[in-house]
Length: 478
Image (cartoon, rainbow, N blue to C red):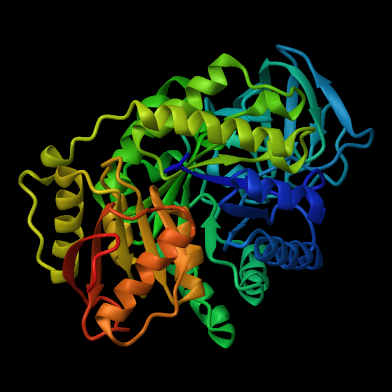
């Protein structure tokens, strides 16, 4: 069964063997996430090499996403590894403290005291602990515990409502970008960007570091700061896509605000011709259980119905007991949700103008395939732009993007409803179109008599040159 929504999965201890990873790819994994919050450069290098080899064995390209740690603000370490906070007790966050105890703990972000004032609310450990700021004295933040519990080493800190000044790119991130480029990753996910400048800086660093390797990754902005919400359009304009990172975002803006924000972000991304990934706790129970909860099934399905390009797994595939089964379950949910999606293609095109020839051809192919009931849309593309524009609209007609560029093939692994395929295209248009149809037939995507809508550019081999739309039946002679 054709699946339009893509699956991103994090690999970690539970999925870092060739056998498990190959099974995950065959179960439907499209993009592998390397989490740079954990592991060494050598760990990531070994995993990237394993991904490329397993993808080769599976007979298709799988993209790699490097997810940067960003300025995750955390408490330091405790003498005994943890402490228990009781409601009403005083507790100090001290930027100069080396080892914490029952009265205070250190900070990895030494400037935090400068960002806070009395009456601010701090949320620790993903919001499970709540501290009210009473006063700030030098390096010390004096608080009263509102919601207590166990606080252990290196737990995260958020300020309710956002407003912390930590830069989006740390020294570690800059070094990790260099490592990621040496691995020829296809996507870089930037944590905690506040504005377009953060994303432009990350792109510039990645392009410079990637130049010796011929790599220009696509940049994904992780929306997890309250400040990113009013700047969402400028962040979209400076990125190739966004990630709805519901963990830290929920801590900053409140859990109740996230579902509506998710729908808004997905809609804005699609209207801006950008990618969007929905992430965090999608199948969380499958870390320990072989089946998801009904709520998780609905969560994944709703993201699909919202129009997300991809759904993402974190600890479920990195550290869970059932990484392969989780991908199988997620793929099945996506397919079922897509069956019920209503196409509103005609409404999508109202009041729209297309100034570029290649974009007009892409939209014309969608419209034609939808109304003629074509079996497939086939785009011969160099950069993948034609396939991206088509994928912003839902038609129930699968899109097959054939390209001679491996980098484009991997990038399109994240485009909704696009199946990327490799084709060393001929310089002759009709020969290339015939070869494209033969690839579809050989892989079982089309059969004799099926109607197919094709797009191609003349002269062949020029990015941005799509200028021809052709409608054929399989078996016809060009």
